[in-house]
Length: 240
Image (cartoon, rainbow, N blue to C red; front, side, top):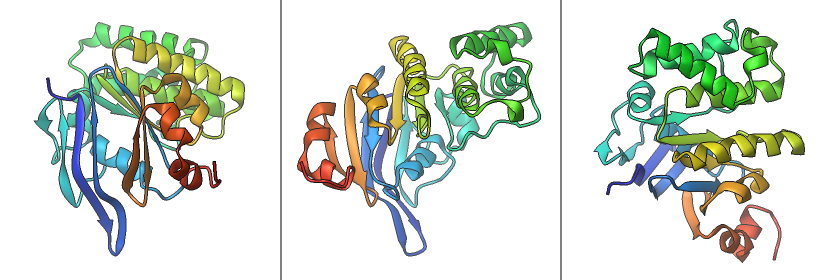
């Protein structure tokens, strides 16, 4: 069976700067992959390449076995890949419900009534029903993170790419976010979560991958990866 998403020998260069360097990854159906690395390691660039926001200089991206390298974010969303952004980027003047409705309208084949039901469902799953009619710009920071997640979920993804969704949140907020993402994962959605808050990944990830300078230098069972000398030195800035 083809991987739900696969990146093959991806290179991204901005002038003389190498953001991704022959980076490959493969995520199986229902798998949760956590990605760690220091600032500037290429993590957000990786999310951009997976989502179609950025075309790699070379290399290929596959979604359910289909080569989608030349496709942008909207056609990839219609094929089952959804992504959150950092920082959250909702339509500020639209309500939480309307923000979800935009995604349901342009990234799914659902009819009008089904779109509304899908929006109400994701608002329920993310705890946003009480603020469904509040403009996104008026939401609290944590509510905006949950809305970012809801906007991705309403497209009905088979793989969800999360770009530092937990960064800067209080511990209790991280716990709430982890609970939501865990429920999504249990429903069969594959997860690719780029995150500095390692405790969030520890609750969800089946596998961890560490990158630096756009290169993969560790990949495996989460405890083993985080206890390795190389990862502790590069990611944590310390010796084991």
